Structures are given as structure tokens and as C-alpha cells.
Length: 367
Image (cartoon, rainbow, N blue to C red; front, side, top):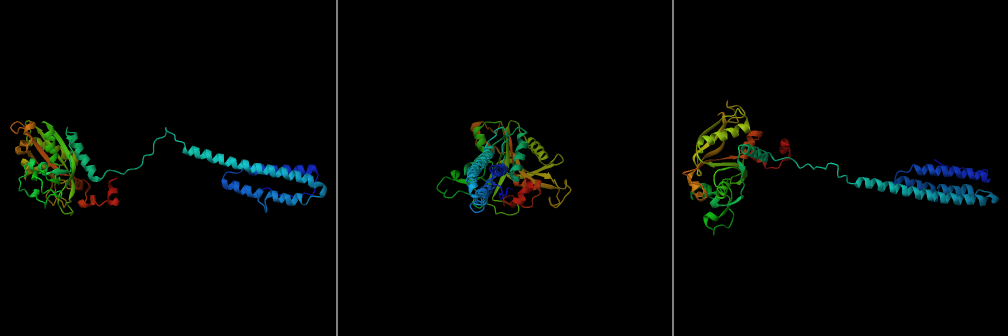
């Protein structure tokens, strides 16, 4: 770092050598500046009023010079001041230009680079299982049907052969929209208790043959416990054509269960009752945990009840008879399963409410 020397010789040659040394030091220091803080220190070192280099030169050279040499020393001091101020200004411009160039390079958009994909998480385990179930039936040629969650009593109950006094139509089991008393019973609004209304809506719009699978959210007036929730998801299916039999139903569901749980799983059917199917059946699968030997998961029976199904009741076809659904010429089967029920089995979850608590620690296990 440059230090101002004391002059013993004030001859023009000696002054020229001293000035050349100072210019060399000034240029060297200005080249080493890389930031605004470097420039600030450089500026203060050379131009500070108390101890700057120019102030030291004024005190050490000009004031100490003998009378005859003051003119020559003063001329060179003025040259030094002009040269120093110019060097400091040039250094500042250089730093600003470098910073602008760096910012421009940072702001420049290269459209050839791949975009930044923000993580958006993964599918909820219930939705993942629902998609798996739908994919199995789509592979068998089924299309996907959808419908509103707020339904009328007609589509949710009446057209599905529910008698007027059926327990499901009571407010203790079904969530009705408020202030519907003035409407006719069939027009009263409710939150659908199953996705079966989409079956009727589909048959109203499409003549046979029909093969649809219907995933969706349903609502029931159930208290929340380990196995029940007032909001859950179902996947139902409907197949209507000529000469469809119960054997077709069994074969379809057996294939679907093997696709979901593995080729070694077995199925069995036993009689049940649903208003919209006749005959009706509940389907069980051999325990996927013990292979049918009996364990705590299957209550040591070797079987797990999974869904309800049956042949479509001819009374249901009567509601859409005008669209080609003549029960003397066509037949069909329907089935419905709870998605959370299957998700609990697939992921060995203890309680259904874990799916809805929003605990990230639980959901991260399925990422």
C-alpha cells in the first residue's frame, strides 16, 4: 500500500519520480476494486480531509517545500488531485457497469432451459385407491360416470325401488337440505347416500348396452368412529345388456378383486338384500393378510366382507323403460364398494378417521 514519502530533493527530476510512483500506486489500487465497499475505502484513503493521501501530500510536500520550489510542487499537487479524482470516478463507473451487467445476466430469461416445476404433493391415499379401482374396470371396457352430490329424493331413493317407508329415507340416516318441507317428497333435496343415482341418470340418457363405473363422494348421517364417517367415497358399477347373468357378475368381481389384491385371492358370495337388486348378495374375499387361514384382521374367519352386489331389480328398469330398458329383453348387474374400506385393507390403517384428520405425518407415509 502506498505511503507518502518525505522529499529531500525538490528538483524537477525528483518531483517527477515521486509523482510517477504515486500514479503507479493509484492505478494499481484502482484495478483491485471489485465492489462498492472497496470503492468507498479507496475513495476515503485518497480524498479524506484529515488523513487522505492528497491531504498528506499537501502537508508533506507543499507546505514543507522551500520557497523557490513551491511553484513546481504546487503544479504537481494540482495534477495529482485531478488525476486522483478522475481515477476514483472511473473506478466507480466500472463497478456500477459490472454490477449492471451481472444483474442483467441474472435477469435474462433463457427460454431453452427447462421450467421450474414446483412440488405439488401426491394423491391422497383414498383418491389413489379410488383411481386404482376405476382403472381395473376401465381395463374391462367400463366408462366412468359422474353426477351431482346434491340429489333429489327421486333419483336417490324412489327410482332405485326404495319404498316410501324405507329406514334410509328417514332423517336419522340421510342428510336432507333444510327448508324442503313444502316440496313434493320426490323433489326434496338431499346429500346423496350412494352413487347409485348416477346409474338412473345414465340410463335416462343412454339406451342399453351400458357399462359404467361410478366413483364419488357420498354422505350419511353416521357418527364418526373407527369404521364409520359421515363423508366417504364409493365406487359403484352397472352393466346392462341382453343375456347378462349372475355368472357375469361373479366373474367380473372375481377378476377385479384379483387385479386389486393379487391373483391368489378368492371370492365368495352369500345372500343379502338391497332394494334395487334381486337377487342380492354380499361378496367376501379371502383374507389378504393370512391367506384365508384365520387371523385377527379377519376375526379368524379367513374371509373379509368387501362389497354388495346383485342383479338389477326389474322395478328399476321400469323407471327408464321408455329409453329401451325392457326388463323382458334385457338384464343387468350392479355392485358398490366403499373406497376407504379397501384403502384400510391395502394400507393396513387402523381407523378411517386417519384419512381425514390432515395429519401430514400420516399422509407422508404414502408419498
